[in-house]
Amino acid sequence: MNNIKLLSFYDEDFETVKYIRTTVFIEEQGAIAEEEFDEYDKISTFAILYDNDCAIGTARFVLTEQGYKIGRIALLKNGRGKGYGAEIVRFVVQKVFEQGADFVLVDSQNYAVPFYEKIGFKVIGSEIVDRGLAHIPMRIEKGEFCYGKDE
Image (cartoon, rainbow, N blue to C red; front, side):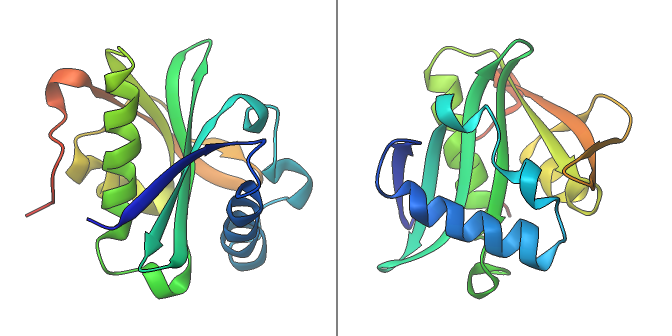
């Protein structure tokens, strides 16, 4: 496992989170820049995934009115295709369950639905648009989650 650091919006390392999300969501995917950083950022817990000393990925989790939700999961190009996405998702899901949650929500970009299904998430709704990007609501129950590597 790589090094994963937890932090808040107020931590100086939030600049790293901003860099990764800006690079991936705004520059690469065309997300609406004014909507990338939202009201949930101030109350979320963030994870930064490091490969050696290089920050390559981020994710957040937050308690919403609907329950705990993970999101804004992003990997820089040099971190893709190496299993790091599953690693950081499993890490933040585990952290949410450690806080007593019975389920975790995520809005998956359409192309990533199979990725989340491999981890155990199930589609629970119809397509929504967030920051100009199409997403599908998904959920995983505590009893369906296995922390570990995909086969």
